[in-house]
Length: 399
Figure 1: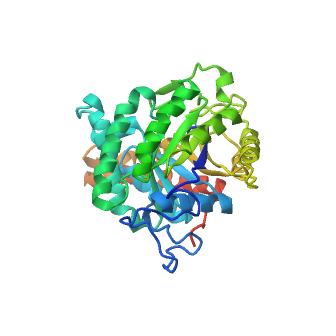
Figure 2 (figure 1 turned 90 degrees about the vertical axis):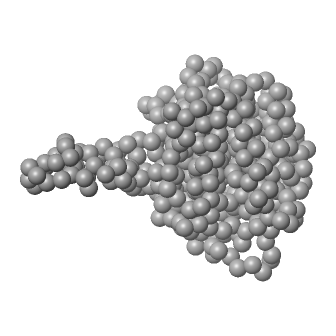
Figure 3 (figure 1 turned 180 degrees about the vertical axis):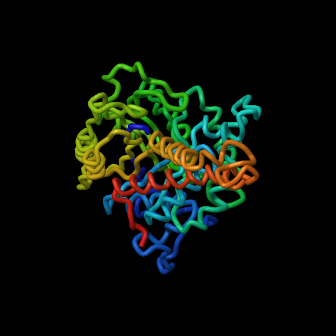
């Protein structure tokens, strides 16, 4: 699981801004004041299925106001995607389904041609369309997000933007709800300058941008910061405010900022990772004083994971305005644990196509059918996500 923190920062202008009129008359997200709510505890704009644009901002505003955070889960195929939505249906809350560059390639198939990131792009696009087709069947709001995109991987992001543009022309809303750029290894000014260029592209498509300040330690899915200087694991409030000022200049901008507070990818023994969620509270105070708007929590934060984090730390971060926590390592283990338990339980029926404790001529097809072990993985992953939702106070927040 990842341990980065992020802040949702809404520009004061245009469609994404709180209280502003949504400007895309062609989109299905424009709501009338008399429209029937799909969920009794949610804003009227939030419906079952993929949530984008104004509806996404309304959802995150609501999470901050009510004091809960949404699980954001890295996936690698329809099994893990469906486990996410199944979990959300069980715990009664929204879910964020997250694709990485490597995950997209795996979804397309490791034997597929990945020259110029073709497979990584195609896999993410195909999986996103799968979610658009089935998400409403689960009766929950689903946010489609992509994870870390460093500078060398920007061609992958360009391909996703092209897919969003094509989808937007047809539907009036984007294929993905949000994308992350991770340029934290670049100088601050260069990081934000590139993010601003992409924010301009995203804003035209009603897509939210997540960017990173500071460095998340450890290693995950091709991003290796295991030897990083520990001083870079803690982001300063001044850096966050600089980014806020720059990106707020983009009309229709909505963005999140992953600001490090001692975060490390993966699972480590207690005491090896020193998280300082108080940084979130201090940053809120700093930004509030700079803005002078009377809001003591003007920012929305995203906690990029939490493997090994205490529930106390997680909820202390939520008190600072955290509205999302990313999850990866723990759900990977949960899926494997489900498959492992299935194999252990049915081992004597999985040694050949014919022959088991019930008889030498008895068939074993119903045991080695891939759907059986994959379903066991899905169930265990969904179970783990229900636990995460409880930690995040995201249970029964729809109705």
